[in-house]
Amino acid sequence: MKPFFVQLEINPKLFLKDPQKTKLGRKIIEQSVLLIDQIGLERFNFKKLAAVIPSSEASIYRYFENKHNLFVYLLNWYWEWMIARIELNTMNIAKPKRKLRLVLGIIVDTANKNMAIEFVDEEILHKIVVREGAKAYHHKFVDEDNEDGFFLSYKQLCNNIAKIISEVKEDFPYPKALASTLIETANNNLYYARHLPRLTDISGRADDQMLNEQVKKMLEFFCFGLIEKNTEAEKFIGEMATSR
Image (cartoon, one colour):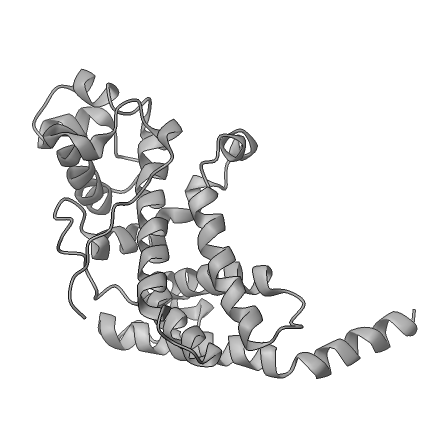
């Protein structure tokens, strides 16, 4: 598929100055992705980032209040990019099941890089999301971040997937739960395959393309298995309720 251009709208509460609008700001985003991938989020800080840009630490603070906001900004970029890819790839697809299969592929696929936005390497960003993405909302002050709308893009992504799930089966009772579970399951199993192989049946010895294909097949098995077996599941739940 040819590269496409989209203007990604990121929550303005995450930054003090829009990094997309200046050369330095775009450099901050570009080098943040590369440096976090190289040394990890815990070791990443603005002093190290300033050294590789190169610029002053103070200049980075003009754009972002702290590294947490910068990290969540990068995740929002990824989520918005995923939303754009899903919309683009499903807009002319009439069959809901085909739409859903395309979505499952997009969840795990990193090959379609947006070359029109040169300062973000989405493939490397995807690796960061897989490895460290949960740190953005698994922390003490998540409710405060949520009130500021830091996760609206992720919610929108899950909501869009949930709508497609509901197109496949209108009466499926848990489309939002399934949508978020599919994303988290994909990321967890990609991570497990590479680092904690006993926690997954996915082989981490495969190259990235084969690994993604394995995870896509697993998502299809879980997703369509739940949707198509929904009647049996509801019957089981009903039997459990009446037996109490």
